[in-house]
Image 1 (cartoon, rainbow, N blue to C red):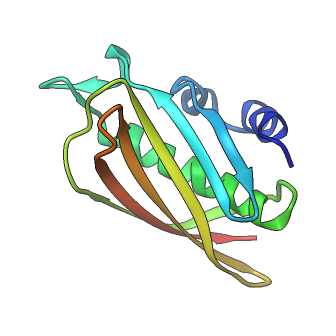
Image 2 (image 1 turned 180 degrees about the vertical axis):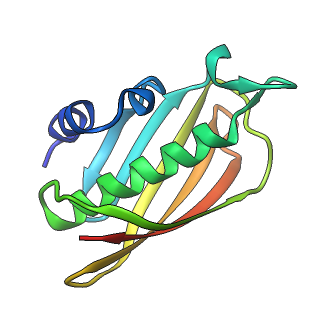
Image 3 (image 1 turned 90 degrees about the horizontal axis):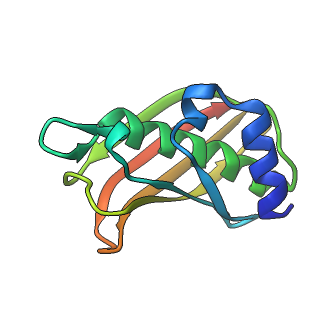
Amino acid sequence: MTEAEAQQFLETNFAPWVLDLKPRVTAIGPEGASLTIPIGPHLLRTGGILSGQAVTALADTAMVLACGGHAGEMIPVGTVTLDTQFLRPASGEALIARAEVTRAGRSMIFARAELTEAPSGKTVALATATFAR
C-alpha cells in the first residue's frame, strides 16, 4: 500500500470534519502510519493552543490507517475505546501522528500513537485505542 492509496482511502471514507483538519499521509506500511495536519487558526482554542478535539481526531485517524497498513490493505474498523493523554499544549506549524498496531487478533486490533509538534519535535500527546474488525 502506498501513501497515495492511503490518502485516497482517507479522502473517500472519512467524515468531512476530519478532512477539514487537512490530514496528509506521510508514511504507511506494516510498521504503522504517519499523518500530519497543519496547525492553523481554525483549529486553535483560547490562548492559541491546538484544540484537544483536533489532537484526538488525528490520533484516531492515524491509528485507523495503521490498522490498514498492518493488514496490507485498508480494512473496515470501528473505534471501541480511545484514550488520549495530553502531555503539553500544542503549537507550532504542524502536528504529526505516528501510529502502530500493538496487537491484531481476529476481531480486535490494539494500537497506539504518539503526537508531536513541528518543528520542535516535542511530544504533545499519547493515545491508545481498540478497534473492532
